[in-house]
Image (tube, rainbow, N blue to C red; front, side, top):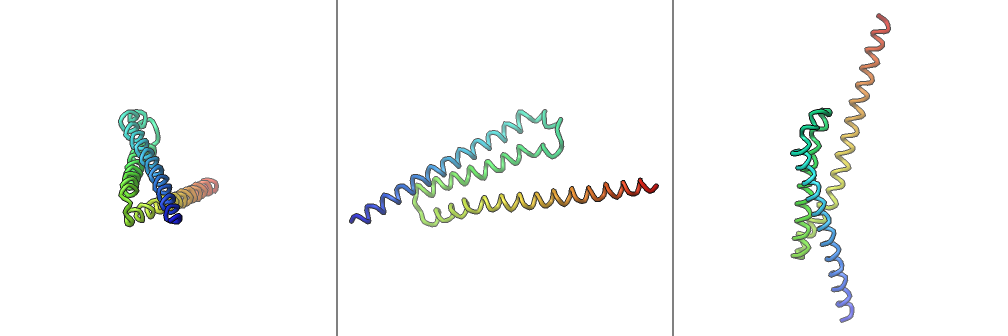
Length: 133
């Protein structure tokens, strides 16, 4: 009887922590979504003054905020319903999201290094060509 009571206490604690984590994730998604929409609506005039690559920042914030918001909502539902398959899917998504971000940033870094290396080589070739002319 005592071990069943301890197990119930652990499950209740685990559900509470998971619900708090999902709620914090949900709030983070709402904040990112709000900042992205605010940046797109209010700061659009300032983006014309900046570089072309910066104008995609509100769309990235809106997309990331939406994904995190949906993930947090699904986590709240999975925790409240205590469905095994929903909790497993939520944990897979929680673990898969950082792996996805790290792989995306690695590919982005490789592309940046490759493009800057090619630009450096082409600038060096132009310099050599002008030097000998």
